[in-house]
Amino acid sequence: MQRQTPTVVDRGTYRDAVTPWEQQEWRRAALDWIREGLAARGLRVTAERWRVRLRPWSVLVRIEVTDGADVRSVWFKANPPGSAFEGALTAALARRVPEHVLEPLAVDAGRGWSLLPHGGELFRDALERGAADIRAWEEALRQYASMQRALLPYVDELGRLGVPDARAAALPGIFDAAVAANTALEPEDRTRLHALRPRLLDWCAELAATGVPDSLDHCDLHDGQLLRPAPGRFTFFDWGDANLSHPFCSFTVPARRVRERYGPQALPRLRDAYLEPWTGDGRTLPGLRRALTLATRLGALAPTRAWTRLFPGTHLPAGDAACAEWLRGLWSAERP
Image (cartoon, rainbow, N blue to C red; front, top):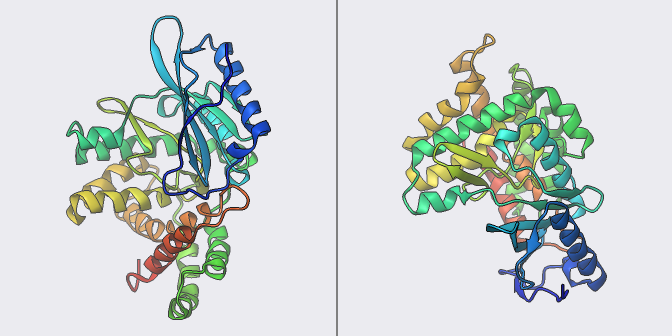
């Protein structure tokens, strides 16, 4: 088989992004690893013209393969050091909650590489063509919460894979680091955030006392991070921003997306759909709603750290601007 370099490269708006793809030795090693992983699964590349997507936080290669009958796409992903745990985490999730995630075809945890199968239609695409609506969002979050509950016994195991800690006790440190490092905050923003810190400590203490155990937080659970392989079924993927945290922090991002698309009136049903799997064990729905309100507020802190998980040598002013927006949201109301 001729081994030519893929020629279709998408850099998006990140023309100057630093990625290892530009290193010939790295690229050759990655392509050889992809071919070996595919061959081990009985898959053959149908064309050498692979599609490469370069971003400051990942290298993604789409490859058309065949098993002798069907032709389908698979994906290679390379993570930077800050999210190199993703491949190992994806493999662990496939063992623990296989009905909710993709099972990788191959993983090299040391190099932060993974090879992933086709998992069905993107939820975003189903929404755009009218095949899904707010009720599908509710079911997706219900299934996601069930997955989080199933992962409760394995939190320490996931931590040993390198998944970052964003539990309540760690949030004040994340807050301090985010405020200190951000270049997009105005002086008045910093003054307001420093004044907010004592209240933030109270929120963290209250959240830790809710009695809901910590679990896995996807941290960027929007409609482009969900697959819909069939009506009523959802698969969760792209775990490079994940943290260990109070599980309800996961509600922060989907709540924003649903509010933008359907308006604030859609949020109460979405909230209760997510909370339904957490009822029982003496927990009341009003108490869970209060915990969710706290976690949704504090869940804004974890994304501020996700922007630091870039390939070395990369700094994105847009990341600072996005983090500043999340930080300003902390004082959007006097109390959560």
